[in-house]
Each structure stands twice: as structure tokens, then as C-alpha cells.
Image (cartoon, rainbow, N blue to C red; front, side):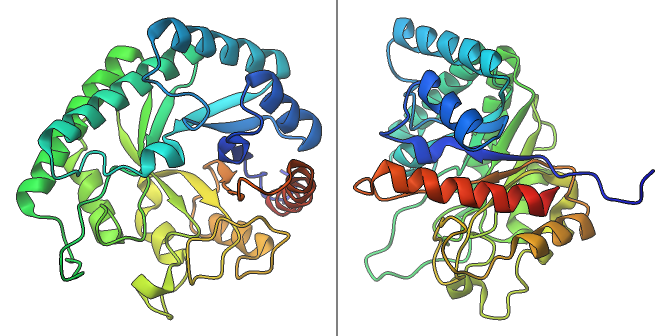
Amino acid sequence: MNGFPAPIDFGINLGFCTKRWVTPELWTGVVRERLGLDLVQFSFDLVDPMWPDAIVDRHAADIRRAAEAAGITIHSAFIGLAHYSFNQLLHPDPAVRNYAEYWLGRAYRFAALAGIPRVGGPLGAIPATLDGREADALDPADYAELITRLQRLGERAAAEGLTELYVEPTPLRREWPWSIDQARQMMNDTASSAVPWRLCVDWGHGTFAPLYGEDHGGMEPWFSGLADVITAVHIQQTDFAFDRHWDFTVPGKVDPVDAAALLRRTGVDGCPVFLEVFYPFEQDSRSILGALETTCARLRQALA
């Protein structure tokens, strides 16, 4: 024992690669050579699991091979921004909900072929009302159906050999879960799933002041209240006013050293932390690489 805390595993979500470094040869080079990382969270913005089997299978094999060759571990795969833009498992049309469940099953199949043991992301959104009022909770029948679907998805994931599924809480009243209590309820209600459902919490989601209030306590209530069911964390720079997903070259309210201390204080430091940042499509790629290099070096040092 040297008296120093163990390093916190640090990686990056590949959402920043969307429409840029889209092949495994490209993104493994960026991750390994430019950012000095060996841990990633794959994004389904790079592969659509609904492509024909022959295309999906080839891409999965290429990803598995390229990651192994580069010495990169793919911890999990998240649904990405493209699929997130749909209402998914909470769409008002049951046929669309069925399709969203089928899409996730296809995502599980791809992940298994690519050697990715975990899949997750936000679950969906109910529609807005004509008067703009947003309820504090899902309709009980809608929630019950959602839990039934999650149980079925657990069975599908088990059949594919996956080890864990993720729910990512979001700061929207039309999505579920958006509060600590709701997240706990969902974890309790899916406890019998064939593959365990766990939480990936995001620094910009749990600190969204317009929803939780200016005196929301930051991320500490989330980590303290849900430490036993959180197994991954997204970190981003943000101002608590919106879900920014900035890198750490931008001024904001998240300090990497304080973030590392909070993870250790609340017992969440055994979970991997993934930088999740997004950039305008029109921003030049060279400036993005420079910002990511600076950001990853700063976070790696803070989490060491």
C-alpha cells in the first residue's frame, strides 16, 4: 500500500467521431495515437444495427479486430444521438415501440459480434402536450409496459451473451427516469432481469438547474443515492444551464480534480468514466483533435 488512491479508469465515448472518424482504423488511431487512451464506449452513430446482416457482421468483425490490434477495450456501446432523437420505447404508437425494442435487439446482436459486452442509453420520451405542460411521472400503464419491455430485452441480451444493460437518466420530464427516486424505482423493478440493468449517469444531466433547481447539490446526491447501481459515468464540461457536452477547453462548472474527489468520496471510483463530448458538424476536425488532446490529458491527470 502506497497511501495513494487507485486510478479511476478513464475512456471516451466515440460520439465525437460521428461523420468524421467513422471506420475502426480511423477511430482506433485517434484514440490510441492522438489521445493516448485504451478504453472506449462505442456509439451507434457509427454503425446502424438495422443495416443488412452482411454489412453489420462485417463491421462488427472489423471493429473487434481493429480494437484488439490497437489494444483498445470497448467497454460498452451506447445508442448515440441519431437513435436518441426518436421517442423509442415511449413513443405513443405501439408499433413504433415494438420497432424500438427490435432495434435494441439488433444492437445487442451487433455488440455480441463485435465483442462488446454491454449496451445502453436513454430509453425514450413521451410526446409533449398541446399546452406544453409536462407531467411529473409517466402514466402507470406506460411505465408498467416499459418495465415489461426491459425484462424482455434482458432475456434477449442474455441470449446474445451480454453481461450488462444500461439506462442513462436524462434531465427531461418527458423521459424516464429523470430523478434519483425514479432511477431507484426502475432498478428495483428490473432486479429480476436475465441480464442486470444498471445506470450510467452523466455530469451534465444530473446537474441541470432548470429541472433540479439552482441548489441541486451537483452530482453528489446521484452518486450517494445510487452508488450500488451505477457502473459507468459520463463526464463533460457544462454550465448547469443546459446539457452542453463541452470539452474541458471551454470554461464551465465541472472541475476535474473535484470530480475525481467526489467519485472517490461516494464510492463510485470503481466505475469507468467516459468523456462524452459533441461538436458542430461544421467545426474543422483539426481543432477538435487539439481540444480533445488537451481535455484528455487534463482528465487523465485528475483521475490518476
